[in-house]
Length: 246
Ligand code: BTN
Image (tube, rainbow, N blue to C red; front, side):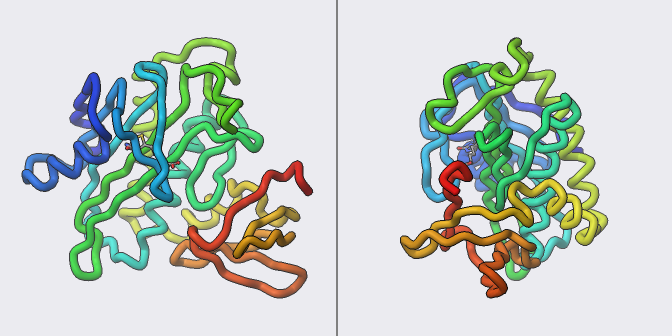
């Protein structure tokens, strides 16, 4: 069961690496959660570094073993985890949105990032390492486009309490993936997607273009309408520019 076993570490290179090592040693059960106060080599998407002040934020990795989830459905797992993070905030009356593919934003500031590393066996996902970094009690992140719960609520949040709420939501959305409720997952993801159907600036091949996100494909590509010409993008092919530059 997800969250049945929780391992708390003081310091580790990366909780995702820690899970990967346990997988290699064949020494981890489905649903195990690793928490750390500090990471010395926290990793983000696109090869970025994930920095977090020791003891102030949630550093979380979940090991999950999907049964029979094919590789071409892996974006549904990514959407489910983003929805779980987003819903945890919405339950605290915080208006959050998902920035494609799976950042969590308040306004245009990032409060959480997700790094999912899937290990495949033929056409299925054999092991999934689901890493989440959530800004909780660290102040001053606005300088780097971030925000934390303390900035929003003006008070300290116990990290473990927040973690239990997040785990509840992950269980709920994991179950939807397990039950292959793909249409529902996609519909909920789209209804929480930042900038859906709004004019926004994108950078594509060093060029700035204005378009509207209209949909995503099954594989998780972003569909953008540039004045009636629709194009699909992979994660590395496009970046969002700040809305204020419109
Ligand atoms: C991103 O937005 O770039 C993804 C950030 C993911 C950070 C988390 S923190 C826990 C886990 N361990 C890591 O090294 N990265 C993820």
